[in-house]
Image 1 (cartoon, rainbow, N blue to C red):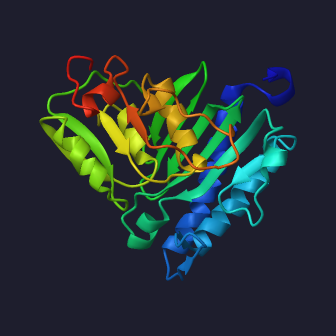
Image 2: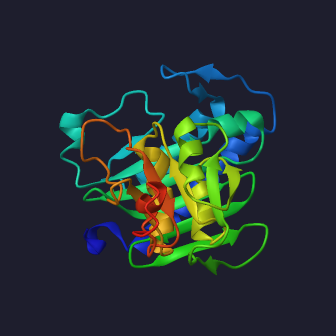
Length: 277
């Protein structure tokens, strides 16, 4: 990536934080009142907040980097594979991750903005507007957290595995395979969380592991993956390979693990092979 052409990644990250705050403000205006819930083709919910945040992010990114394409969950027409496969870099956006949490009004929803370069997330911003929590990271620049109700920022570092293990789980996507996997881990505590906050809590050393079975899309994970990786953790499939982006026609992720301690072979642990973990 040419810094001369596109600006320093740190500067882009700061620009994306500002864009995320604008999108978050648009979300919170809808959150403050009554809103209708529609259903998309995959039966996932859609609200006016999703669309307002989408417009705010597209407008902001067009000003920040007009030459870089944007792939957003809420685009009316998604770029086809014939076009996408030629992209060396692009913005990958989920304007409102955790719409189910938004509808439940539990505050656990986020704005996700990631820059993908050569199939890897090299910049990630995750903003939880109801919680005033901002997370951002870029390759070579580490990861940071700020509570916007206060001043200053904190550099994020993951931790070594705890005992008992603290496991982040989805609030809205139960899977019987998770129950079987948890039984192999021994003593643990399950902490339900919504949206990309699961990655961010691992980056803040508040949980050890997030196990995800079932479908997710690439815009669900890219920003959180960047934050967690730059804090010292990892996001891989069950073979231990980091998640990659725009490497195939489908935008669906495989089942995956997100973790703080990269010295642990989490996949082996979940297979019940403690000798290799």
